[in-house]
Amino acid sequence: MAGVILKDVVKVYEGGVRVVDRVSLEIADHEFVVLVGPSGCGKSTTLRMIAGLEEITSGTIQIGDRIVNDVPPKERDIAMVFQNYALYPHMTVYENMAFALKLRGVEKAAIDQRVARAAKILGIEALLQRKPKALSGGQRQRVAVGRAIVRDPQCFLFDEPLSNLDAKLRVEMRAELKQLHLSLNATTVYVTHDQEEAMTLGDRVVVMKDGVIQQAGGALEIYHRPANRFVAGFLGSPPMNFWRGRLMRRDDALYFDEGSGVLPVPDWARQELDELAGGEVVLGVRPEALADRASARFTTSDNQLPMRVTLVQPLGDKMDVYLTTQQNSRSIAHVDAHAELRVGDVVPIYVDLRRVHFFRSDERGERIATRRDPSK
Image 1: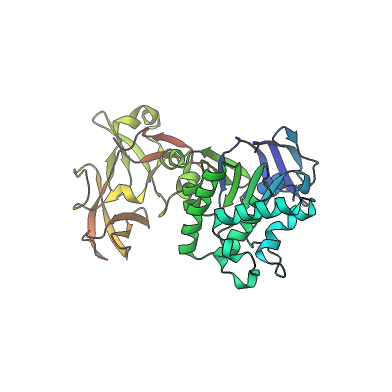
Image 2: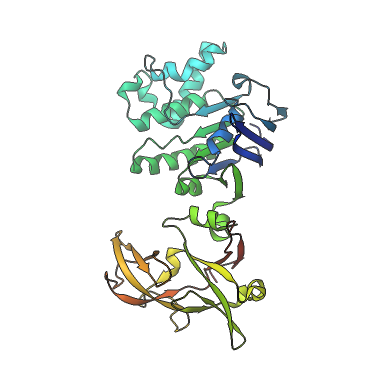
């Protein structure tokens, strides 16, 4: 296996459309890195440039100890798994998995051994003589992964491989891919638009927007300490609530004025926010940091805002409650199913001030303050 290094990589299409903008990223040997972001953010283009399926406009891509800018895909020693499986319909599972090895002149005994090993790892030994049309979507995806495994490449590349599967099968395949990575200890670059998939799979998550890396780090690190409002709103389901308001001083204390009520600025954020008193900021609150009176862990007159319930969505032991204030037309609280909240009610909603985030109110929305350990 080998690491992958991208340095100032740029991709500009005809007409001056810049889809990847000076991306620099070091992927360590054996690391599982997930590129995540909305459609059009440049993540798949970045992956295809690593694979050699797209030429880079400028910058360098290194796999192992080689700069591969001008190396054709077949000589980069990578294996790629596509969204649409890309299986040959007239070949059996065995033949699909063995095809690339045959082209490379590998002896039949070695091919048999590699295919058998991959099939055992993926649990598809009984499918080797079937053709793709006789397989389910999950089985086809396992064959596509098996075809990559038999090549024993320096790096595995996955381009949204689970997006064609139903929700239940996606969850199962996520677990299988993670187990596969742990058993193979392979360098892996994985692209997805699904933030839940990114958080569960990656050793490290790279969040992209408009061809630019917004933040890279461990999934929980990014979730608890997002670099800006885009990252905060992208990772997490339901997404983070953002309330625009002003910082105000009262009796030597600092408060966030949401418009329909005020919340005290917690002590851990005072130092960063003191100099912004009188100015506008954005308060970020995840849905699980909001609660009704019955389920709130901290209930005081200071940490609640009056909100109107507009929609309740039961989710088994939890429910999503949609709320409005005079200033914000939609917020979501993720609360226990026994919460006594009914559509039309105006109720106090309590904010866990240990778990809030403060962002700048400009377009970039960089983080100003987040508690380092929100659990305490």
